[in-house]
Picture 1: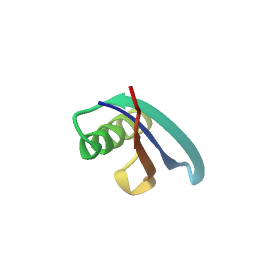
Picture 2 (picture 1 turned 135 degrees about the vertical axis):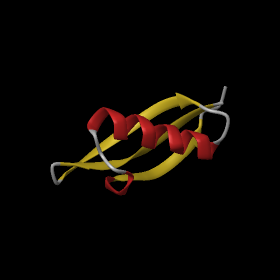
Picture 3 (picture 1 turned 135 degrees about the horizontal axis):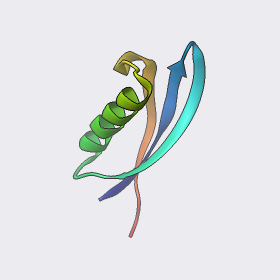
Length: 59
């Protein structure tokens, strides 16, 4: 399934929004993938990443 995940993150104290499209087996897996990807790319702990919305894309 494809999901669109949106939220915000704090980089050097400045809030930035993001929207990610990804493929995952479930909503919880999509959430984990976003935490992993953003955390790895920006060197952020999960506490600085806020997920606001997870929507499944219709085919």
